[in-house]
Length: 298
Image 1 (cartoon, rainbow, N blue to C red):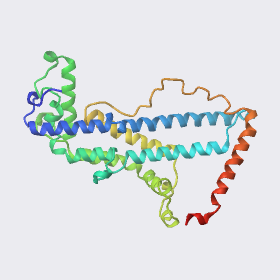
Image 2: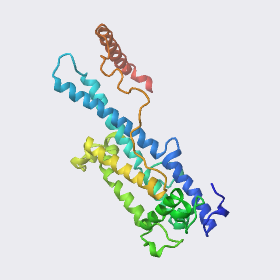
Image 3: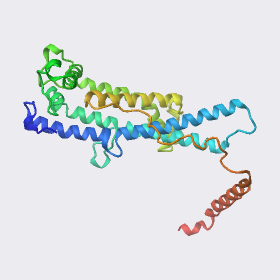
């Protein structure tokens, strides 16, 4: 990174703060082990695996073959765990900004709120020249496309972010507050699934609490998940590509192995079915005995 003193920025103090904040934002979005991009990647991987398995289920049902089938309780477990996993992933990614230092989270709203809180240092000159790029005067003929194009794109991005025309550009232009307000608004589509997570997954709502829920807040569908995925990915990519001028998010990871290997094989052999029945009976008996000698609690 170019030394701050050598950057084509007039307010060096603001640039120092901006650089520090930008490093944080970049870490939250891309670099941290629990970064927003890693959370999204994990969420999309699980979604792709489940939907592929779900398609296998559909194909098997349509074949109407007695030699093919799925175990009912296992299917219910897979369906339920998938719904819980994805709803909680959406909830984590859309968690609000907790201002208690002990409760801070890596979520899209927290990232947006922190950018909004530091809007005074989000100036055009910091956006364009924080990395040592010239603020003005570049041309295709003199500097070549590799320098000129990013410089041109940054200024055009900031024109839209600041709602300033190219003719009225100023070093002190700031990102318009409405940008971050609209980004937060885009995530509101996840509100019903957040309510579902609070009432049925993270907590067990009592009957009175469930009475006030709409029908839309009482169920999870693949379409609802898609709507939330799309909103989270689009907002995160807007921040990554346009606000931070880095790169997009939201691609399903490419497996480095055959992720469908053995899916066509039976799960257990016919000879092991008796062993599984015996295992089931043993486990049932273990649980029954947990209620013995209740007075020992006291």
